[in-house]
Length: 174
Image (cartoon, rainbow, N blue to C red; front, side, top):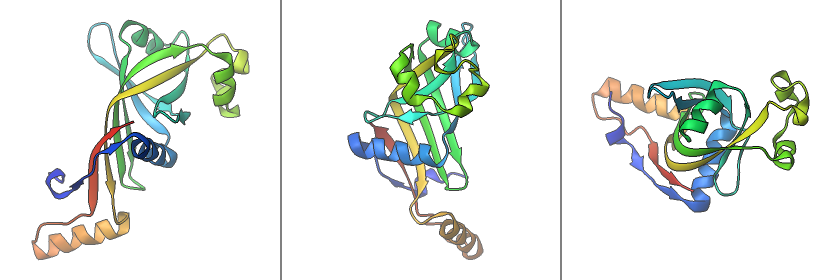
């Protein structure tokens, strides 16, 4: 089913784009983080977005010796996807990614939960940060909320009339 033609297109820039990024990440900070192997194939793993900063950069904690960091050292571009069915929100981000080793920034982004991967805390030699600077973002969202959207879809199915799903999509340019 192609719902793209039935949605309102609303591109967002600068502060509005950062606000939308933060909103979607705030509802579901877990994304699928996609990198490229040296042979060109894709590798994916779940990652937690630790922060969307004021410029729209996305920050992650990552292991120095992980395959993901090796991929990014060779090809510093990635794609992230967030699917949040509970809020009917979807996000795709293409970004240039750098590996950052900044102790002060690590302290800002640290959580007790991260100790499961980095047992020595902020001083763990394996701990690095990934700074993702978005180059292209697309989002899909609902205007009316999930329940109203489902009622509209059911109504369209019963009447045979095209659905006005109340959805909005567009590009984000922080």
